[in-house]
Image (cartoon, rainbow, N blue to C red; front, side, top):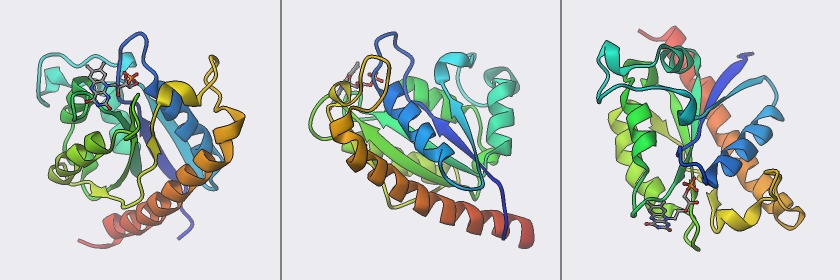
Amino acid sequence: MNYTLTIAILAGTTREQRQSIKAAQFVAEIGRKQEGVEILLVDPKDFTFNGDGNDPEGKDPRYTDITARADAFFVIVPEYNHSFPGSLKRMLDSELENYNHKPVAIAGASSGNWGGVRAVESLVPVMREMGLVVTSVSPYFPRVQDLFTEDGSIKEEYKQQYESNVSRAFEELLWMAKTLKWGRENSK
Ligand SMILES: Cc1cc2nc3c(=O)[nH]c(=O)nc-3n(C[C@H](O)[C@H](O)[C@H](O)COP(=O)(O)O)c2cc1C
C-alpha cells in the first residue's frame, strides 16, 4: 500500500488570545516530517458555519472539501468547562458522511496540569457517533501557555518530549489511515 495520505489537523478554538493554536501548529509541523503525508491545518477561525447542523446552508464548502479529501484527522482540543469548545463542535457538526470509516487522533490542551484530558474523553463519544475511529495515543499539552515562545516555536527544554509524544501519535494514526483507506477502497 503506497498511499499519499491527507491528514487534516483541526484546531479547536477561535478566541483572539488562544494558546492551543500553537499546539495545533506544532502538531502540523511534526506531521510534515512524516513520509508520504499531506498536511492541511484547519483553523475554525477561517470558516463560516451559519446556524446549527449540517444542512447545505450550515456548511462551509471549503470545510466540506477538506473533510472529503482527508484520509485522517488530528484534533487539538483545549478544555473548556471540562469539555470541548463550542466552535470545534460547531465545525465538526457541519459534516457527517465525510468522516465515516476514517481515523482520528485527539490531543488535549489546557492552562492547568491535566492537559485537557476531560476534553479529550468528552470528544470520544462524539467522534464515535460521527463514524470516526479514535486512535489510542493522545498527546497532552498541559500549561500550554508555557510551552511555546511568542512566535509559536516549542521551547527548547520541551522539544524532545513533545516531538516524541506527537510522533508516536502520528505513527498510530498513519497505520490506521492506511488500513482504513485500503478498507474503504477494497471492501463493499
Ligand atoms: C471558557 C473557558 C473555560 C475553561 N475551562 C477550563 C477547564 O474546565 N479546565 C481547564 O483545565 N482549563 C480550562 N480553561 C483554560 C483553557 O484550557 C486554556 O485557556 C486553553 O489555553 C484554552 O485554549 P485556547 O487558549 O486555545 O482558547 C478554560 C478556558 C476558557 C476560555
